[in-house]
Image (cartoon, rainbow, N blue to C red; front, side, top):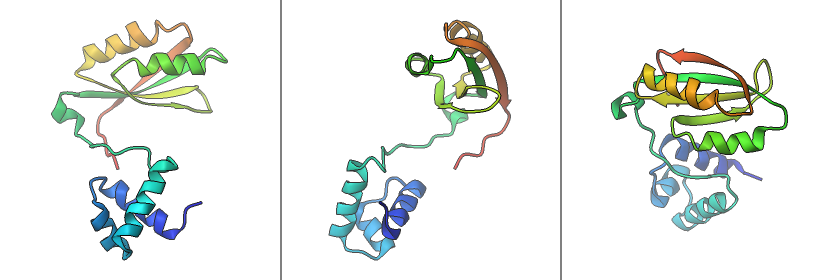
Length: 142
């Protein structure tokens, strides 16, 4: 169970995952030892599952982004999830409820590459019944 200090620590790390234990201690007005111990516990308990750099996709050559929805055969999620993980252009995936079953964030170098991912890779997966592609014109990540 997270207390208020844990929640504040998580919020600070979400804003800046590069914060040191010392900086966390100062921002939360707790001792450094307490900050390090709490951070270690949050990592051990898998509340904090990793630290990563957020990048501008366009600046790293990924000029086309899209959400791709999948309708899939029932009871295929576990196998499909592993197949989707093997496609490097799939940057996020979620099993969802509603008009479709899976929502993917796909980032590619251009429209031709996106077309290839959707038509040649995703639609070729046996579990995939249908796809729908929604182009992203502007992205505001947090």
